[in-house]
Image 1 (cartoon, rainbow over the protein chains, first blue to last red):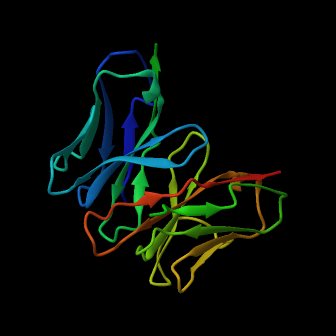
Image 2 (cartoon, helix red, strand yellow):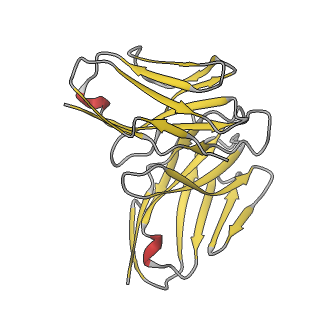
Length: 112
Length: 114
């Protein structure tokens, strides 16, 4: 059974800092790892998806890495901005593409 | 191209009642999955439907049921509502057999049980 853990549960940083969010999973047989952003009371916005054959993906100020052998993924946010304040969720996706196992998220606050 | 849509946006029900939530996937996506997200936690998998058949079920009681229609839209039904069913219900669509198997989520339905 896949279990996903995200550390830390909450993080507060001043604007402009670079930061790393961590995600660990127990089953290395995942097909891909997806990072999402969730604003309060809203749905999920996909940020980055890393396929099992890849090691990292980049989009703007975001960079996500995947190490299947150690069961870890990280989301790096460069030059954080107050607009980055949200909850960030990681999810391991199994091979039939229909079931994702989520962590409980990291709630990020970026202070001006 | 329209994303995943869900209706209604918000819903308030009383304990013991029944509720039906609806989801329309992205055009061309034949798989729909349902998730329950309780406040402060990550989404929990409830069901996956693909080609109108149930392909996966999470650890939820039989009060939860779903179906998928010929146009690939889906309904989630919950009977005998409990206070603990209050949550954000999310629908996701995807294309099995087409890497990278990305899931696209709708805005969710906020269910409050009083």
